[in-house]
Structures are given as structure tokens and as C-alpha cells.
Image 1 (cartoon, rainbow, N blue to C red):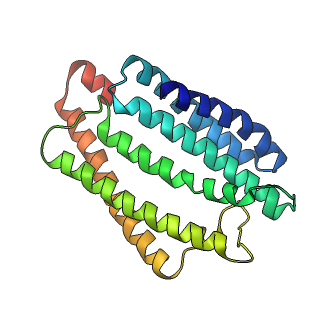
Image 2: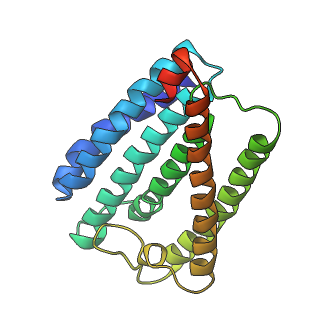
Length: 210
């Protein structure tokens, strides 16, 4: 699994850099490069040395989501905004949605930092609740994306994203806002937990949390 994720991260990074230049979206590639490369490197080291710690795998997954999302958005810009006749352009639009998954995984990493373990009780239930809300939001995104890709013509905004997803309306707008509010509330709780842990800790663990 480590080899698969590492190879996927390297290959997607190699594709992302020239594609961002060709699609005239260098800013997207730069952001993904600055954030994704450190995550990929740290994730690979942690996953190799501490395979039971989920943080290494989460960091790798975050980097892959960021790279693939940037590739998808840039590819969609080439196909739909710059008029290039490219195959599988709809796949690029679908991949562009992965940026939100990377963000969700990042919040999960905050909760599990630094050793990937949670004490029995409230925070384990909070983790289950977070995953449940994310699952429902992911399903809503999947349905909205499928509906947007089935429409003719496909609405694409200036950044290469699906207009129906980036500017939600109807049932999807309600589901997205509710899901995001719940995820943000839980993210703030996770950050608050780490602040309290830092105040109560000492030694090496305090330095890790800081």
C-alpha cells in the first residue's frame, strides 16, 4: 500500500506541474506543490517507520487528493475553457472535486495527531460522527457531480470546476451547507481538544503538540 500511494503521489506530481503551465493555471500548481510535497514526504516517512500510525497514510492520501484535484481542474480548463479536444474530459471534472476530500482528511489528522490513537469514550464517538457526516456529504457530492456531468451542455466555471457543484442550488445547497456546518463545528472541537492536550502535556509530547 505504501508503494502504491507513494508511486501515485510521484506520478500525479509529475503530471501536475507541466499541466498547470499548459492550462495557464500556474497558481494552482504552485499551491499544490507547496502544500502537497511536504505532506507526501512526511507521510511516506511516518507510514514506513510507523505503519500502525494512521497519520502517515492520511498525509499521503491528502497529498494525492491535492495533486489529482489540481490535475483534474487543469485538464478541465484545457478541455472546456481553452477549447482543446481532449478525451475523458469529464474525468477531470470529477477529479477536481477531490480537493474537498483532502480538506476533510486534514481535519481528521488534527484529531488523531500525534500518535493516531484516541482514548475510549467521547472522542471515539466524535470520530465516528465526523466520518458519518463526511460519508453523507460525499454521497451528496457524488450525486450532484453525476447530475452535473449528465447535463448538456456541462457547466464549467473559470477554474475548471463544475458550476453546479461550485455554486450549489436546491437540495444540494441545503445538504452542503448543513454538512459543512457540522464538519466545521467538529473541526473546531478537534482543535480545542489539541489545545487542551497541549496545556496538560509535558516533555516530548508537549513539543510535538506545539
